[in-house]
Image 1: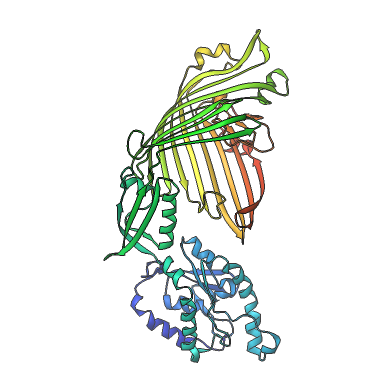
Image 2 (image 1 turned 60 degrees about the vertical axis):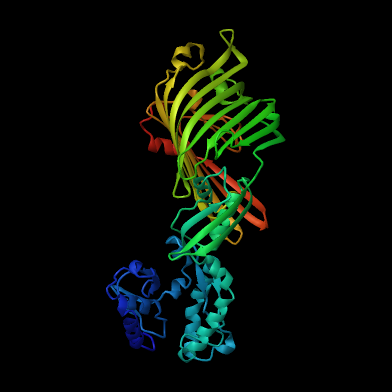
Length: 555
């Protein structure tokens, strides 16, 4: 029991909250609300989100030794600060964009300040409170610490002084608070654009009318538009309207339409090459862009992209690419009891697709693809001829979904990323040529699913853990060797169905299905400098046997 029953406190809250007596769920209050209490019998944290608002607030503030516990249901509850005095994690779970923390704790007393039994009880009670609060404080966006030195939980006579100290502390953060204050964006006017349409600009900004937004997020979205290099200058103002604000955007389009960039590249797989990038904007219509990457060297290759970007409206794209390399591969040598065999691999792809963006961070692609694959080796002769593994054409239809919720493009500290593609390989001329191949398996139409999921979380100040899961599965019928997943190597710009895996050589393992887990621990020790520790695990056998028992050619 406490020194006071708290009846007057309960009466005051009941009167104060009488205007919302009919609201049972606190989520439906004019300002959604929850509070935290502690089960005195087991120390469990209890989140109160429904029932009597007055009773919930009374329980959440039932400071041990001062006020009687409050019975709600079968539980006897005291102050939630005992278990979580700074419930930042609970707010994050509910999707809050900005969290303002107000710290009104005076701190632990020294021995000279412990002059009574009540002081000792309060000190003991506060040990856990302060320990947990220090961890949670790091998760707030704005941290306020009013001057409450010399006051405690029973300093009711000094309420006015304490409130004034709180207002004084808040004024120090006025600019930051104003920039984070949300408003409704009900109108957007764009001036100066000629080649880039209204929908393209809104799509690049990831803005929709009636968005709830603040000045800080507007600035970040303007930076996104600046990063396209399509505008030499961007200026904007926000004007009040009857419902919210109007964004007036003034842009000066860049006069540069063509770019040519040159560079050198070397890695163990592709060897040495001279890189050339040619980019041309507005080559046919407004909002279009053509890009061609060409590499001349040990292994010539190119990547062509043409895209009509209509922002949130339907966009159209064409892609063409050629990748080739020659490498000693372990998997292909197994048929001849050879550790490795040199294989010449070539992949030629042409794609047509449509793309639409929705809900700002989501993109959906639908398209059709022609893929030609060739793989042969002159290391070993078969029937007095060089070995041919593949020389086949394929047609496939695909659907691709991408969700990008990361807060940064490079080394994100929070958010998640998901990219997946479902493919139906419905035609191949392999069966007409299979007699000339080492592997004479018949082609039958099959489907594949490939996906990547990655998320980042900040564990401590400057320390971030990013974990990534990558998986590919084959269904309906077994895929041909061209579509089997080939694991190994460290390159990122690999042909389709080649999966990088540090520690293994290129295509050391070839599987119909695979699951790969990877973790990366990053320490941002100075500005943009990071120390990385990476670990990964191949999980194919376990997952594929559990999830895909119906695959005809099991791995």
